[in-house]
View: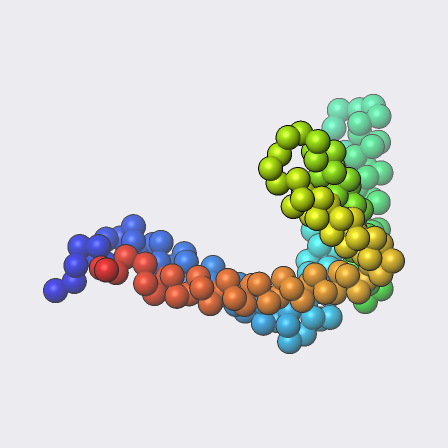
Length: 183
């Protein structure tokens, strides 16, 4: 006879949600690890589709807007989005590499800023002074490394995301199997 906890529809829904998210994480993580270049291109292609759709939406808003500069702005923005999306599709490999460099550079800048901001908290009487300084120095150094090699940094981060997704996906699947079972 099944226990009341395993026959509860809410528990079944949670188990299903955990299982689906676990399988998705596992599959996406494996795709990143097995075909990192192709997976990155697919991600950029999805972004390109979004940009084209956003362009069409902006053009539609511009066509139905009453009048004035807003109308012109929406129309121009829509055309720019569509051109960017088409350009991205036409040069998917180059766009993917550019996107990797952009993300690597952005993360590098953010890590440097985070390190500098952490250093500003050192004099505030915290008992974690040494850890704060250590964190700040590592953050600044990692940011500088990313700025000198943003594409390599982005690829490394992408692969780390793949590893994380595989591990978290397996954990999530195990949670789905175990969730709601009596101890």
